Image 1 (cartoon, rainbow, N blue to C red):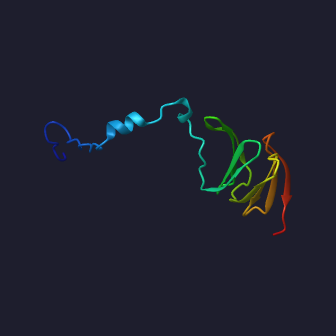
Image 2: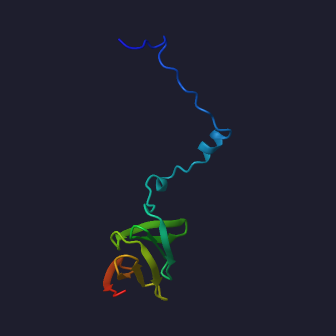
Image 3: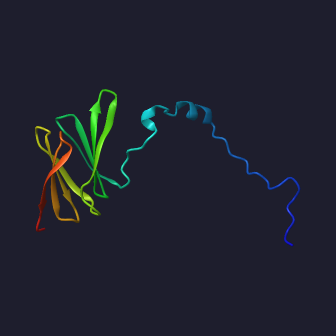
Length: 128
């Protein structure tokens, strides 16, 4: 028939309270901007800042993300799966901030982006 449970049901584990838990909860951000995460899923590999007020980040899974600098911080703009299954090895931006080059570590491709148009304009296959 099986074991008999003690009267009153299973025992509840006591939750250990943090010393300053109320303060931590009070200080947690609660604005709309924190409701959705735009973080990279892969390890961050490169960050460049353009003269046109953009920040571009690249991760180990080949994703590039565009962010616009604002007075209150940065705002997510666009994401590219630039180098499929290949980490981004390097990124460079032109002096005027209008062009971006990303180099994939495993796909042997250099990709050129129009920063202001958020668009890829050229793919260069490298022999290395």
